[in-house]
Length: 77
Image (cartoon, rainbow, N blue to C red; front, side, top):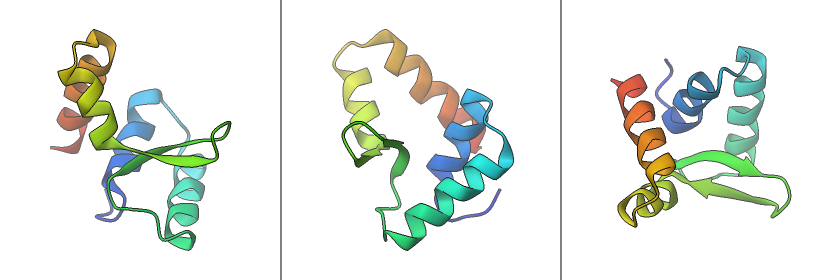
């Protein structure tokens, strides 16, 4: 796994995305100089989503977000 945009790459594995999709998303993040903590892009809101936002949801009691955080972190190991 490449070192840049590791959260995008791990999230891609988590959702079962094809490698070309993940590579395109990483290239877009590079072009847009997105924060290294992004893991996804919200097309409706037209913004990058930070992994810390997902962690905050998990810490706030969102069990789905907590499982996502746990699994993505495991993928990154």
